[in-house]
Amino acid sequence: MSSISKSSPNQGITSFQAFTQLVDYSLMDQLNADPNATSDGVDHHPRQVFSGHYVPVIPTPILDPEYIIHSHAFFDELGLNEELVHDKDFISVFSGDLTKASRPLRRFGWATGYALSIYGTEYSHQCPFGTGNGYGDGRAISLFEIVVNGQRWEMQLKGGGQTPYCRGADGRAVLRSSVREFLAQEYMHSLGVPTSRSLTLIVSRSETVTRPWYSEDSSSTDPDILVDNPVAISTRVAPSFLRVGQLELFARRVRNNDHRDARKELRMIVEHLIQREYQSDIPQGLDFESQLVRLTDCFRNRLTSLVAQWIRVGYCQGNFNSDNCAAGGYTLDYGPFGFCEIFDSEFQPWTGGGKHFSFFNQPVAAEANFHMFWTAIRLLVEDNPEILEKVDNIRRGFREEMQAKMREMWACKLGLIEYDSELLSKLLQLMERSEVDYTIFFRELSHVPEDISSLKKSFYIKTSPELDEQWCAWLSCWRDRVGNNRDLASVSTSMKAVNPKYTWREWLIVPAYQQAEQGDYTLIKEIQAVLSKPYDEQSKEVEEKYYRLKPKQYFNAGGISHYSCSS
Ligand SMILES: Nc1ncnc2c1ncn2[C@@H]1O[C@H](COP(=O)(O)OP(=O)(O)OP(=O)(O)O)[C@@H](O)[C@H]1O
Ligand SMILES: [Mg+2]
Image (cartoon, rainbow, N blue to C red):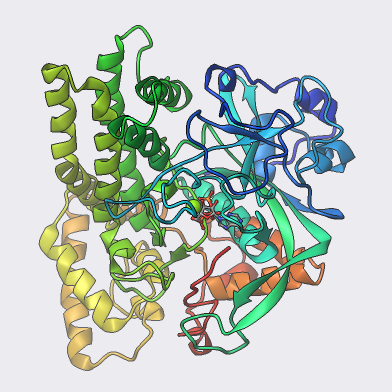
């Protein structure tokens, strides 16, 4: 679990100039740039990109940037001193201004194309040209990579302006969505769930964009007003930003025989993926085809673990398309996401997401993404039946592995040594009938209570005596299972380490971004601190404010309980 540790003034990198010494373009330089890219990186209009792995693009800085917050934990990991946020060159670069960048920095970053599959169905008409060649990072621009203690990190602006993939949109992200993404990424990391990380959040004091949103107290499904929002840039960081959709893009070009180098470009991006994300799992000395088998196996392992973890912590990605599925197996794109409060196996905060991307259906959505991954990479071993058989077997085994990871997760969450399907399914029924708060329920259960009174803290409805009786029977059965020859205090400790006390409650986040729109960042910082220790009890004051059921007025509230637009 991460903690906030602030480096002392003498420790770590304090100047942007020193920071630039970490920058490394060597792996990116092995990939192909779009041969039709402009030589000056001024490439901000929607156009088709037919080949190459990336397009060099100059970001568009936000006007009058003001630093809001950075990740203390991640600064610490990277060996950056807190002082760095006072270096104006550091803030300029992470607000999208590369105009004064000097060597080793380059004056442009890059955007990448990717394909889209929704729940295993390929799409290409979402791009303005109807071909898929205009789809990709429309507002995400990577600046550079740094290497710290042998670990490579790609630094990417979200909201850094238009790219050839912007499809005519403004390339911006609003403060609301940037605050959400910044805080959620850090929270996920503190929960111990693999994720892209947050570095900095910077807002413009003068530039705004208009977005549809919800009027106060609106219960409408779709936004009912247009709002001017300050724009912001959050910088997110990951070993790479390669998505399943990216592999698909190159695979589609191979299948369609789009150009001479299509197969070569697919192989290059797959080799790049192995180097960027799987170096520690796949020995470099192996021949490429054996590496591919290992890659398929490792990705299946990471993806199934990830989704089981999501369900453990109550997270719903909301829009788990292949273009929002990181090929490194971590959480990516905190737009339409939400955390389950009142338990509903079909919980889905994004109104456009439907049941297929809902809370408990995420293992199935993940399988659809894995299927697209497998479809793409198997093109590279088509002429080797032995290898193909191995890769296909791994594909076939997805469901079984997913189920095994889910069983393991539920056993852990319930403090059991062995998974018990009957105990779990009875519990889930009771949870749904009693409308329990997902986080509060499991946290209270983690105290291994003797009766159901403390569990009732998590109920949104008043239960009948008959329902109470069923709960008592369930609890007694569960206590027998967990207590069998085990010390209950240690069961409780291990349960508390997997059942967080503090969760993301959208109605507590809303005031933070609303106050930030008025220039007050206190609440953002408070939430960052609380969510950085989600498994700790924390103070009485924090408990009273953050360990609470969702108040009635926020049920069905547009922009809080559901949203149709998240950008
Ligand atoms: N304001 C915008 N300007 C340009 N492109 C945009 C904008 N908003 C979204 N897009 C693009 O539309 C596509 C779908 O949007 P989605 O909300 O999944 O992505 P996102 O949140 O911008 O991106 P990411 O997946 O990089 O976190 C993405 O390719 C994204 O780059
Ligand atoms: Mg996305």
